[in-house]
Amino acid sequence: MKLTFQLLDTVTAAPLLAALHEQCFDKAWTEKAFTDLLALPSTAAEIIMDGEIPIGFCLYQISFDEAEILTIGIIPSARGLSAGSVLLAHGFTYLADRGVKRLLLEVAATNPPAIKLYLKCGFSEIGCRKAYYREESGLVDALMFEKFL
Image (cartoon, rainbow, N blue to C red; front, side, top):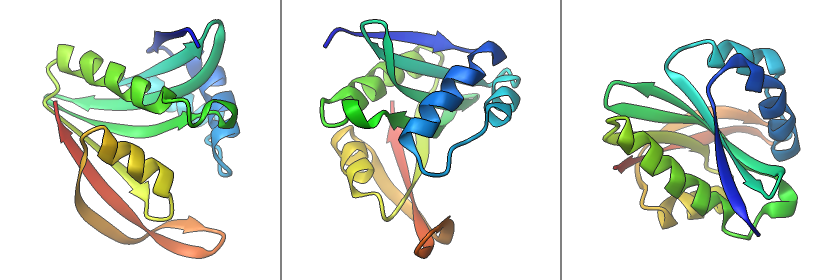
């Protein structure tokens, strides 16, 4: 794998992000959702590519010295190859260079691979939103994580 990164901070990135999101999640965000978020000056996205092929993305909302990961995903064919860890590590540097000191995220309690990734990358669990996400099986908790950069 030859991994590279690209920052996407304009609404022109919305179609690509929506297509990647659809490959990663059962409930995909729409192109309009990405357009609306990228229209905000505090939002930026980063994609990770294997050669010329986009294999994952991370969407950040930055507010002063804090940021939140709004969504992150690696396409199924690239999972298990450390692309998620590499994408997060690159994002930590990107955010720290912009003065971010604390990074937050939420993840469904029913997503053990993501939870394992976040813990491996130095996040700490700081809370839980009970019955926050709606899944086919019903409502599930959202675990809240933070990492100091």
